[in-house]
Image (cartoon, rainbow, N blue to C red; front, side, top):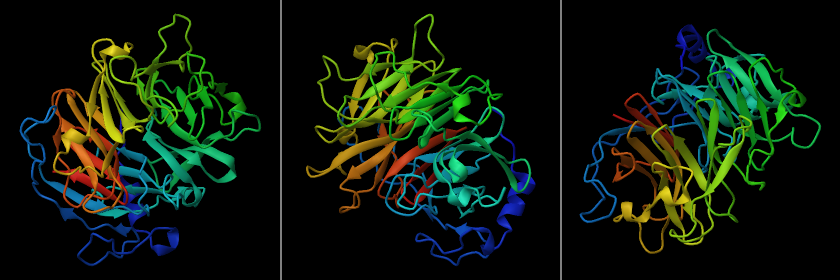
Length: 418
């Protein structure tokens, strides 16, 4: 996927003063003075190598020690997770505040999180009142922002090739059931097809290509995307070619992955739910919060709600067969950090080749020395090492592998592995 450099657009953007909606405080982790650029001065700490918490004999644990990290703050407040996170090929980071207590705002950083700004748009101030729940750069090099915005907008696009960024509505709330919801996740494919899902329900809309206009009624109702006839909730979604792979569902259901339907007459948006905890793995309820997919494997991560244990599922040769998934508990991967009173929760996953990274949290959040965790596998999910950076926030919820660089985002912080 092509990624335009932001060039003059970002130079113009970061030169703006405080009157354009940017923020200019010193951040909590910054030990030095702030900047006067009108962007957020995030400062940062170089965590450096840390100890390997994985002791000998711990099943599924590598011996590798963490490498150096740079940890910096970001402007979305509170201890809530950060679900809207995307990294361009040139390292530009896009981050939304939608799941925080104060949910409005999209922030961008082109300097590794040292400074952040709300992009200036035309029309003006679109993003300062947009509850951003999902963000990604799409097939046409536009940045797509989803959630809930002004004038009943659900999804907008940003053309970052000029300044201010031209903002256009992609999807607006309709007036009928199934066409009006908080949009997330939202995803486009290489051809321009798009899937918009309900953030807190099972409604969904689909467009076959980018020629469909912005009226929700013009999109296809994809609310029956489940081939099992049920009603499930998608918590994360990725594109695999022109089809989609997701995961969910709710606290009252077993953890599920959603794979492209194999039926000959299947619609492009139709997905088949796979129950990950059938016979042989032990039945329990819980959600899958993050998914990554390639031609080689599917990895889904989440939590066993009945036993308060974070879970990682790695598919084998037959991803449509429940029995072919390997189930990995997070607790044994963090032996020196998880006590009997603690519980773990895997929140996000990213994958590039055989490198798999899982991020999450130790609960109760903020209790004692509990922080978010980062687990890394270099063998396709067969083993994992604890590579958590020092100075981690209460939770890490998203990660990105762009090239060989790992970036993670969480509650008020981002980290880049050096």
